[in-house]
Length: 623
Image 1 (spheres, rainbow, N blue to C red):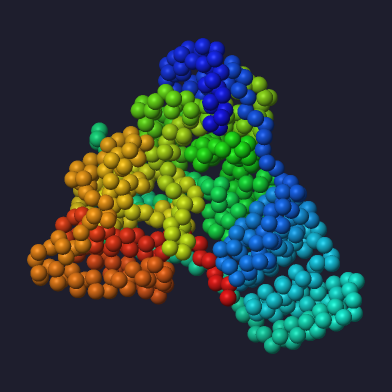
Image 2 (cartoon, rainbow, N blue to C red):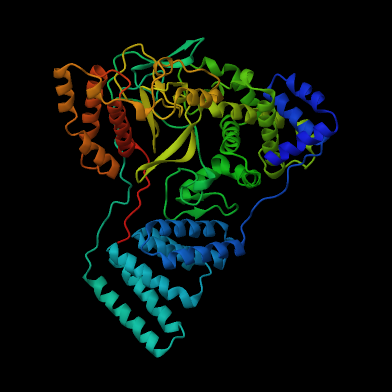
């Protein structure tokens, strides 16, 4: 998209119309009119969005499968290489044409990786998909034998018998040498005798649910504790304060998102709808950019937004549109679906701020978040308006969002009031997203990984501090906000926007925070606290011997807790969060800040919260 914008600017400069067009854009006062002007400029300078998109393709699927085969065959004992081959097989599945032999082969080959990871149920699912498709007859035996082995590990006696019977039928019909047939028949007999000795197991198929502590919810803010309230000031805008004493470790908010979106880099490892990692993803039949953990997620996505995105997102990805632009499109589609029509959408915004109960599941809660439009430069607004115009073009010409597809003439779009209104909504979302949308994360090994973005209207009211008193973790239930330290009644709660004093000096933080259009005035900034490597431990900051001994006693198990956190070994250690919360409270009460010991304890508390309540990508052993 940078190339398109640069080409447009060059054409404007070459014709001497830069100042004229800039003035026309500058005097626009609504997002709708800004997008209309961007469309007009595109028409004047003949900047038509390209008709370029990747579709399902047999040869590309074959190439991906061959690359995955090469990695898999030579690295069966290397977990990371197996993960790479697994992702490539999934991509080959997404790109293979529907009902093609390439699709069946990709499913079959991925089942081999799943078998190595002992994902037996998922392996059987892939085998069944392959066998239901145009899978080569002479190769079916290998899949049937693999399926029998999976069923053996799952102690599924009934299906073992039927699959052995199916394998025998295949063996009778296939043209093999007598020696090969004898070997396979002998193998089947061994499997059959093993299966006869198995005791059927009845497993609970439901995923283990994360149990959250009970909190008393606020009647006016259903996602938040009744210990929170919303206030307004000219300095902080709408912000969240405490109404009573909060203890370290207290859960304050559990907010379901208005919307989430998987980042494109995770398209072949995670479900595009629920964002969970899943080993046996199934593809969208029409595009190559969405895969799902189940038919249920697939159908939900189609009804909510993917029937529209499916025909437009591929073109945007070819132009390297970022997640902000892609998410702004999704939010606009969801808003239109929620309200039912553009007219309803228009009228709903007039009363958006007057809602008595904060409704995280309604678009108006997002619509009223800060946009910083008045603080943005003309070039910033024009770039976003141009991006919105391109998105709108693809929505109009490639989808039925407005009832029917438009012709390719830009003038037909720029003069359509419904279209330009939705274009303005896309532009507004592009301005809301940078200051309000949260990253959606998961724990993988010892790292916290971004896997998507999440629209959390209430959590977005939390302001920034370089020394925050709350933190967050992404969960299947939404965004969880918890207290890092004790918080006094009437205090504002502060999160961190990625500029923590311990990892960035004051100048670096100020530069990074400019994108949010405010200057931080937290204590760490006012006192210019040093970064972590220059912080002192508690015993260098405390002179009182009695307090020092008390803290030493408090910290006696801390190193063990750190090792548990690093290893992810917390399942049977339910006391860890409570103990660390108590340790934090004692340190905050007695140790002058800043202090590296306090930092270490708080970071460990954050890690344990994520391991306890957050999303996890658990990589199984292969031996």
